[in-house]
Image (tube, rainbow, N blue to C red; front, side, top):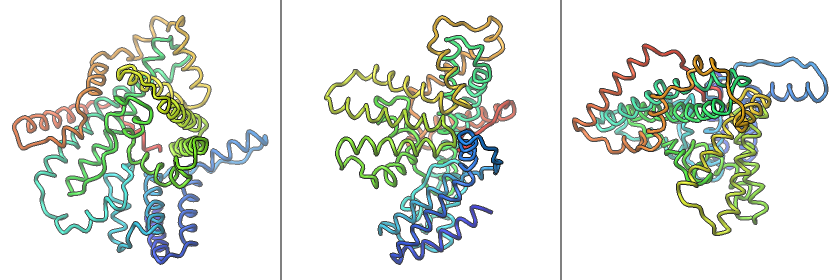
Length: 408
């Protein structure tokens, strides 16, 4: 219901924006942000008011509509680009399909109008394309495997650790944090791959959203490879309009911090997300100074340092509150602390096969690279069939099935 009303409203507003009527752009952006605020952030505001003013304002407790952050960003981008003259008017059917295309609606990628509109209007869209079918099914199976085999298994480990932070020794705390880092990557990249694979089955090419981000040499490279479409949106519609890097070093640093604070808040209404965004913004500022100094580290240490930073900051992303985040970080760096003897026996922390599989896949070609190489050969046919059978086995034995990014 909400997405339907949003599509109709934004389409009507877009017709006026296309005529150069600036006030309608302000109204359109304001409407989209207001809807997002009431569903996603108003309870966070009420919480802070209650704490600061010692008040007891009742929470709204509105359920978060699936995909609201993604389709809100898509429509804001379309309105802005119409105003800039770099997007063209379209009919209601094409616009509605652009916003509501189901494979990417719930959790991205955040598609851009210039990527979707030409494909929707392509007269070959409804014709059978066997290359797209084979490639799409292979990528779909790869994404599903990453989700139900890897992400869900690492999720069990991470959830056990976060549910028992007070029992964790240093070793168990590190395992917990690493498990969540892998869970988050395989969960969201797996969903993105499923969306891309499903899109290809309909002859729609969705943009790549992950490109082996944990192999990044710098934090800047990490953000070029992690949630690529969100990074692109933040760059094009927040960082560059603020001035980007064209207004001097000091202003560039401020622009980076503002962009990543907003990026943190976009992911969730809580101080843990604000801190996570602040840390990544700060890391990018430090990276700029390091890069300008002309100094460089060898590749392997650079990858390890980047991943270590990302892994530590994911603690704030995952923890339910600041106290849990602090407690886990303290446990990670209190190397004298050990867990009770019977804890790790029931916590599934040491699941060797899944750790071996997860770490190995981080260094192999990713599913997008494999998908781009697919050919109608016996090798890829066998790989696809094996993935399909393996997914069926795990679907029938699944014990946890949460898409993390449904919450964002």
